[in-house]
Length: 176
Image 1 (cartoon, rainbow, N blue to C red):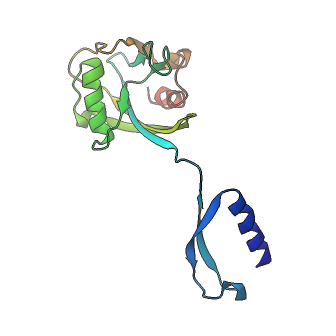
Image 2 (image 1 turned 90 degrees about the horizontal axis):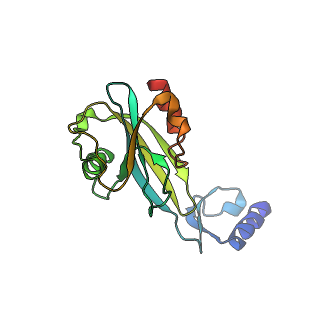
Image 3 (image 1 turned 180 degrees about the horizontal axis):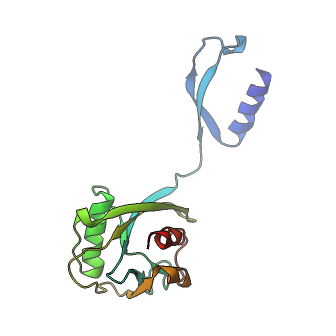
């Protein structure tokens, strides 16, 4: 079809290539062609998987950690957690991160998945599952220069947060 050939040429000029094969050996006679578009000359965006947790105390308050000076998004408040390493599950990453950052022990069975957030930052795409945890061993104590505070769910919006954390507030407010 002439219109399809023109469309293909425009997309090729934009840096796309077509990968695939014709389902009909003569698509010009009305058969269909299955193709996949791939863009050239554009580096793949980095994707980052980070797991986070809403630690909820006996009074129904949620723990927030303030990012320390010298880190990206310093001064913003966030739910504790961190990057999921290649050989980890999101739950295993949370258990490790909570031990490293807050000196608390959490059992995987105490991590209840609640929701997730997805956000496109300028340099990477972030996917962040959020868990709720009401039981842990130890007293959360900052280990990496961060400040901690316990906050009622209704007040979570009063704290400046990274863009990925903000949509999680409403889910927690509905839960708590």
